Image (cartoon, rainbow, N blue to C red):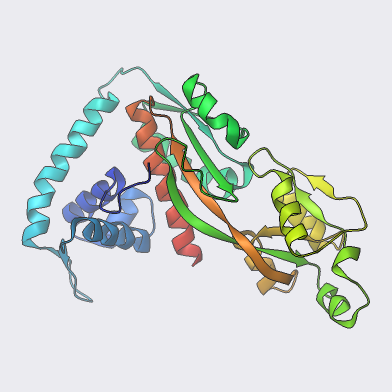
Length: 303
């Protein structure tokens, strides 16, 4: 099922409590190891979910709790305390293993920078990072207890997955080295003449890209070149070895600096999803919220 728009997360509660006790969003950001805009975003989302204002904010002054904020603080601390008990935070508690399937780019760009904070705040968790499997194998992986959480960027929302959350639409574009656009416009090259490099992975089957080409009437005269790693594909495209459909968030910097140019921006976005096994432990729920916070914080900073 999809997340109810009124739901709030433990991360939002934790951020609220930290800000309330610190008396400052900036001090809360330092204590949580995140940016101040991320603290503001977490609290704004919590206020939106609850339908009330929690802080009185005036520029240049300390944020003060409203009446609703004061009432929430006590219950929020109780909920966080109960969460710690469920996780077994007492000294000597057995470490809880959580198996997370995530692709190399999301792992390196979004997750890895935030892992020290996860291990610092939740030493009871042992996170096992696993390669992505085919989307049609996810349910079986959940049923057999092989995986706990998956993070995917796929062509469409997979509503049959348990506890699935739609994080965001991720724009894509066909990009090439500088000068390619001019050759297409002049007729020196056609789209059929281009050398297409396609991201080959179990999470994003190559036939999704091929389907987009067919819909556009593109019939490449050269065989597709399949490469596993998106960062390698980007480097190959920048070096002029071909063109590729890549996520805009990945190539935005290279486009801005002139190392790449957009050849066709009219490609459908990918859908970024997180799903959790229905039999996952409380530790898996903690990791899920942590992953969501890491993904959302990075997107907020990049926006």
